[in-house]
Amino acid sequence: MAAPPANADVTVNGLESEAKKNVQLTLSLAKEQCQTPEWKIRALFNKADDEIYEALRALGYYHPVTEKSLVFEPKCWQAAFTIDSGPRTIVDGVAIRLNGDADDDPAFQKLRTELLAENGKPLRHDDYEKMKSRLQSLAMERGYLQAGFSEKQLLIDKANNKAQIKLVFDSGQRRVFGEVTVEQDVLNPDFVREFISVKSGDFYSSEQLAKTHTALSKSGYFDRIGIRPDTEHTDQNRVPVSIKLYPAKIHHYGIGIGYDTDIGPLVNAAYKNRRVNRRGHFITANLDIAQVRSTADAEYNIPLDDPVNDFFSFGGGFKREEVNTYTSKSAKLSARLKHAFDSGWKQTLFIDSLYEDFTIGTTSNQVYLLVPGGSWLRSVADSTMRPTRGYRLEFNLAGSYKNPVSEVSFVQGSVAAVWTHPLPWRARFIGRAEQGATLVDQFDKLPPSYRFFAGGMNSVRGYAYRDLGPRDNLGNIIGGKLLTVVSAEYEHYLFDNWGVAAFIDGGNAYNPDNIRIKTGAGLGVRWYSPIGPVRLDFAVPLSESDSSFQIHFAAGTRL
Image (cartoon, rainbow, N blue to C red; front, side, top):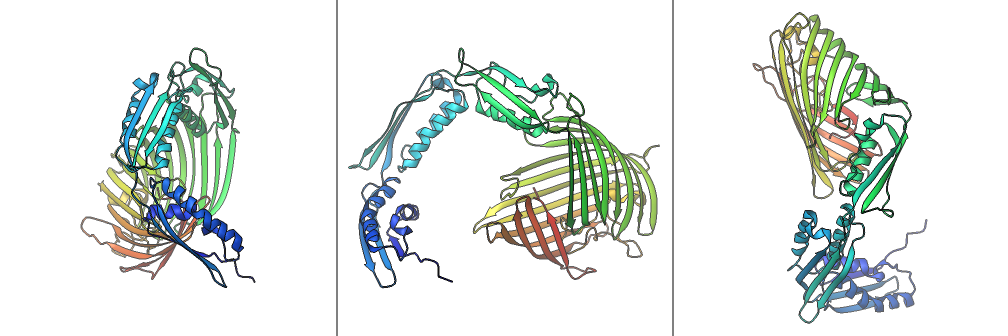
C-alpha cells in the first residue's frame, strides 16, 4: 500500500494565538504537500506576504513586518515566517443613527446601546460585519421589512492606529400582521386557532411565526405545516399570512425490541389515535413485555382551553413485577391534569385508584389505595440528543388517608436532580442526586410500588436492580421508608461518536433506625448513536454485596 501524501513543514512564529491561527488558515502554502511542483510553491511563497497582511488586517493589524525563508531539500521543502504584527488598531468612535419607527423601538434602542459599547475595543472586521448583521436581523424579526443602510462606513486612520464606525440605518415603517387564513379540514377552526400566536393587527414578528410553527408541529395533529407571510403584497403596511396544514394519519402503530440490564429483554408495542374527534381528543396505548417488569396502559387525552399547555386525561393500566426481592401484580385507574408553565416547569396533578397484590419477604397482601398527588418537572439542555450542558429537576408528592376505599395512610415525597456541565479536553461532568421519604402507619401493608429500593443502572451501580434496602429477620429485602442516592461521573469523548466514563455512586434505601450507605464504582463506554446515547457500564460494589460486579446497559439521555 502506498503511503499517504505528506504535508510540508510551514511554521509561523512571533504572533499571539488568535493572530497566528488566522494566518495559518489563510496561507495557501500551508495546504500544499511535499510533491507539489517547485514552481507552484515559489508562486505561493511570493503570494504569502499579501495573505499575511489580509489575515492580520482582519484583526486590526495594519503594519505587519514579515521575515520569511523557503528551503528545498531532497525529500521535501520547508517554509518559515517570523511576523511582527505591529500595533493594533483601536475603535475610537462609534456613531449609529436610526431613522424611522425603529428610533422609538425599545429593542432597537437596547441593541444600539450594546453596539456603542464597541468603542474603545480592538478593531475586528468580523465584529463590524456582525454589527450590521444584527441590525438587519432585528429589523426582519420585528417587521421592518424595507429596512436598509443609507450609510455604512469603517474609517481607518492607519497613521494613528484608530478606527471610526459610522452607520445610518433607515428602518421605515413597522409592518403589522394582516388577515390570517388557515387551510385545514380535520379539526374545528376555533380549536386550531388556539395554536396560532400570529394575530391580525399585531406587529409583524418572525418570532411569533416560528412560535406558531413549533406549536402546530408539537401538537401531533399535522404531518406538514406551511406558513407563508406575503411580504411582497402588503396593504397599508399589513402583511397577510396564509397557513396550510396537512393532517397526519389518524392511526399510528409502533413496535420495537430492546434490552435493559435492569429489566432484561424488552418488547414494546404502541398505538396512538391522533384525532378521535374534531375537538382534538386523542388516545395513547402502550404495552411493554419484559422478564422483570411488564406493563400495559391506555390514556384518553382531552385538550383544554389552552391546548398547547393544558390537558386533562384519564386511563388505566396493569403492571406485573418479578424482582429478586418481591413479586407484584397491580391495576390502576387514574385521572390527570397537566399544565406547562411559561417558565418551563411541567406540572401534573393526579388521583390514582390502585389495587396491588404482592409478596415481599414473608408477607403477602392485597391492598386498595386511593392516592392523590402531583409532580413538577423542569428539564433544560443544550441538545436533545447529545446534551453537554443542562439539568433536570423533579419533585413528587403523593399520599393516601385510610378510608373505606383506601387501606393505608401514608404521605411520600421525593426530589431528583441531574446536572451536566462541559469540562476542558472534550469532557463533561454528570452529577446525580435523589432523596425520598415516606411517613406510613402500617408499613407491612404498603405495596412495593410505594416503597423505596436502590441498586441498578439509574441508582447505585455495582448492585442489581432494586437489590438494596432494609431486610427482615430472615434477610429478605423488604424496602425502606427513606432513599438517598448520589452519583458523580466523568465522561470523556474519544472520537466523534464514542467516549468513555468513570463514575462512583453511593446511597441506599433505609429506615431511620438503620442507615447503611452502599458505594459502587466503575468504568463505562458511551456510544452517541443517531437515536440517542447508549451506555454500557462495568461496576463493582465497594460495600458488602451478593455479587462481585455488575454490567449495566441502557439507552437514552438522562436529561
